[in-house]
Image (cartoon, rainbow, N blue to C red; front, side, top):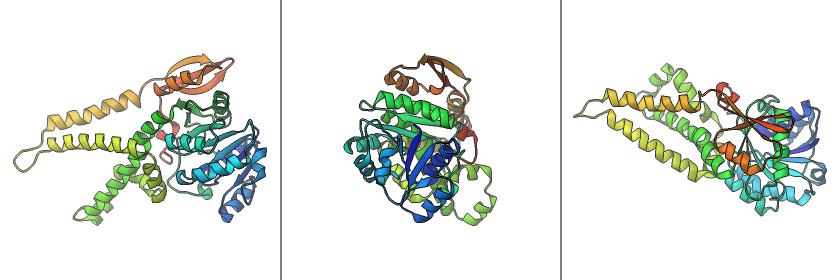
Length: 335
């Protein structure tokens, strides 16, 4: 994959384009905004003023459009696609996106991709060649996803982005990102709403420090973008919120009321339980396994569901690791 076309040159599409240009690949692109096209051209991307036959010359087409525009974008790609071409998206929802790709006639060439990093701001001007490097990427495959294209994308992402790749089915992906991305966006907005509802919001605001900053950072994301991802992953987010409401109601009961004081033992146990979850899943030691380079995609999906990431190719084997944190989880500027 030496020739790459990028449709949508915002934060994510622009970051992908900049990275690949730096790596010496021929990158072409399109964005509906003239100002964005001008900035992308200055960054070394061969910019086109419309979608057209230039797409057919690409080995890989990256569709970096918002979720609610993917149906139209996939239809445009299908009109110019050629045999042997691979098409990926970068959306944060996968179940619906795989269905849209199949409906557009791209089922035989489409591989779902989701880089697990980003910034609250939007636009090409905040894109960064290093933003998506060294982080966890999700690669999603269903029964119609071509195995050769899936394997090729895994190698491509490791080669050009030093990616740590979780291969998942779309349903597992959507449930996972609801928990670690979409629901935290909801909670960030809820925390800000709670600030606005207290008796003295200005007094509270001037006392805000690290915990409130970290808990509300992603609420700075554009509201249309956040609403878009929640709407298109509604079932998974709803399930997460139900579990959270149940957990918070449990804590609320321990806090007591007019005729009953707080239960300090139960409250501490409530906090201890979450700490154990953090230590088990976010602070575990590193493990490694190896699989044949040509192993079937179902095996990779099974390992992905168990938390294994494909991190390297060593001869005729894939190296997988489990444990440790996504670089973007540790970095305060992305997530």
